[in-house]
Length: 237
Image (cartoon, rainbow, N blue to C red; front, side, top):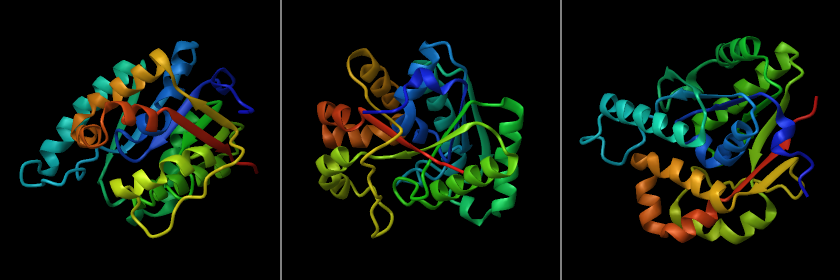
């Protein structure tokens, strides 16, 4: 059973690498918090301008514009009014010094004074170098600022991993041979259903440049089930 509820999270700072990361990993949490009257700020470090298999049709400048528009639509569905795209270069976050990255996140923490920070775990969920860099920056900023905010890092439950790992393998999600370690006892875990799930899937569908292929490959029903679960572990000092 989840020890935390969405209502326990207070104001939320949600920090990710690319638009769509947050919706896949924390869309239901953020929407639920907004519905409960909590303030949510969502930050994407890049515009995700390299997120295509057809760079001739979608050069970085064009795709960045599209993904910014898609993010506006997705955040409107989730109810998140404060979404910021920092504009760092997609695919290059790992080359930015951790001190510089942490300083950027520390500025957000000091500005917003969140009660809870959501981000990737050390594995970045998929071992994407940009995801892993953001995880490091957030953890470092959380430690350096001395904030009292709760730090929650995204994970998958054992049940979800056992059920869907073969499909993730087929889909080619992971960028290394290693696989994430699932959590048997996450601090926060939910399975969206009904209107909450419809809302999350609608937000994902709004990011069609990133999600249309997966929806077509998996089918709408399976895509919904695979994206219903969200889970986080709490980092302790």
